[in-house]
Length: 138
Image (cartoon, rainbow, N blue to C red; front, side, top):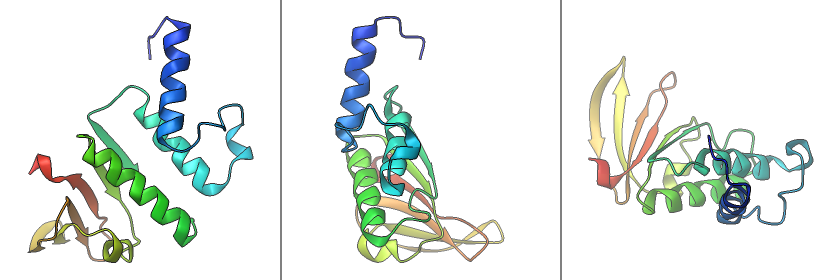
């Protein structure tokens, strides 16, 4: 990060751990965390420098449905805070619970659009991936 002040570093680490519900897990090694906790840790790492854009590649991959929903709720919360969240996933069932505007791409071309509320999702046929962005960007 290029940060020098140890106190500020520790405060920022605790802040992002708290935001991702890992506030009491700061002493653990990644392999000591559950799959959902590891995904939230990855999101915490992405937030440490307060980025404008968060890229999430398969953030719910290999997670149980409850953990997947927790990760999605966290990503939507991040999106509502003013950051862009770009998410790639093959789990189209999440779109039933997390409504968004969906753009369908085939062979690298936009072929249709379905409007929902809160975000932009570019979904696709099997070989392409969806993307999630907050509505402030489009």
